[in-house]
Length: 248
Image (cartoon, rainbow, N blue to C red; front, top):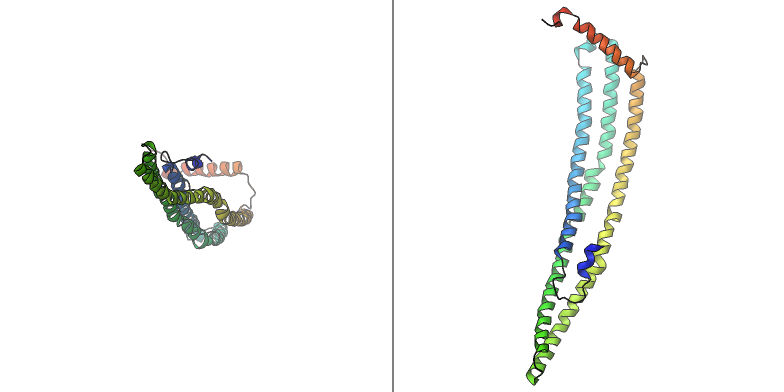
């Protein structure tokens, strides 16, 4: 993983906590998780709006004045209205778990990122302290080895040792745990994705049954699409031939 390269530099001669790491975590994981949360919410709202609109259309058709004149039309619209209401019921069952299970799941996952970014910042601070004290020790190493210089060099090295150890602990922790965190996203999200897929399978299986039954109820003539289109065009031609709709 190329994004771990900044963590593999042995000596802190330059900035080794790359901002690329933070951006990767924020953009590839945090931002994408937030986007997934937002898109899931939009998808749920659109799903519910779609089925509610279908119910509204079928109800409007059923209340059409034509229903008072044509029993066949009444039967067809009643069948359509029943199908749309069944569809709406199954759709609500499909989306009901999303706000309760999936959305909080994504929100809790997003709550991990502040702690992770804080760990990166603590490592950055440890690195800066390490670099500062190492630079101090190197200055004494470059000077003539007089008594006072050797004493100060010894003191600088003693001061550097715990800071270096602290940096190495934080560095190793991120090296070990960041890849685990990165890969854990699959195990974390997979169960919810599988549940959504199963819900979709159940929903569309039921939709196939509902619309197959609806087709059997309203398609009594057994006409093909081409035959229906010709029949519709013929009726439209009859309407156009009426004098009240003829062009002046």
